[in-house]
Image 1 (cartoon, one colour):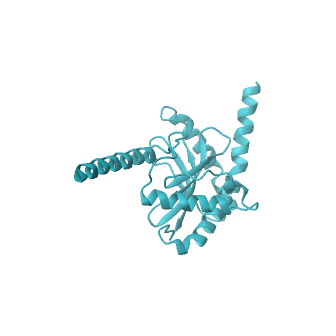
Image 2 (tube, rainbow, N blue to C red; image 1 turned 135 degrees about the horizontal axis):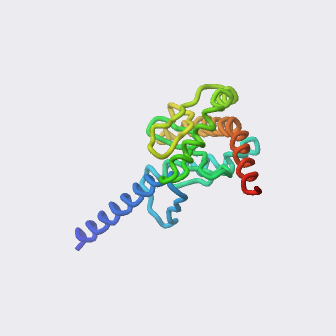
Image 3 (cartoon, rainbow, N blue to C red; image 1 turned 135 degrees about the vertical axis):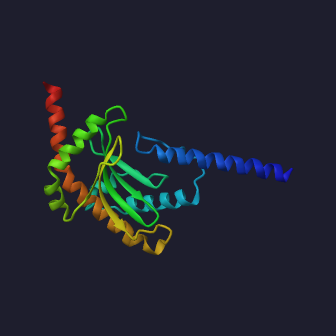
Length: 196
């Protein structure tokens, strides 16, 4: 009887982990809400604690980061106010990224490319304002990214969290300040189009 119960619990755990992996793979498609009751793997639990601390510790000097909603996966994002443009924090095994994710939808690749091309036109000024080169990624069939990679981030070592959160917060604020004038220009352009 106990062995049967253990097998059922293991199957349920496997099913939940598969659902979480599916949700994580779709994070960049749309807004995804992971139910509060979901049991998280240790990896996602650790990431969630890290995100919660990072957002809670954001100060008035880092207002853009304060607007992020902590997630239960290895990435968290916030909208920019322009369709198809989101800002992301992403954690990987030994690095983190702060990035603008450009995605207008799988059937709107031309719109995604137009947005990316708009930022490419301003690449020199964006990188000058950011203070260093960025990674301009157009390798996906449907999405584009403007990335700053931060090496040496290890959320499994909590003794590094203070420095990791500081580096990621500072990088996101700098990236957003470098991109915001162009996002605002796009928003103004869209607003003018709607008023015509």
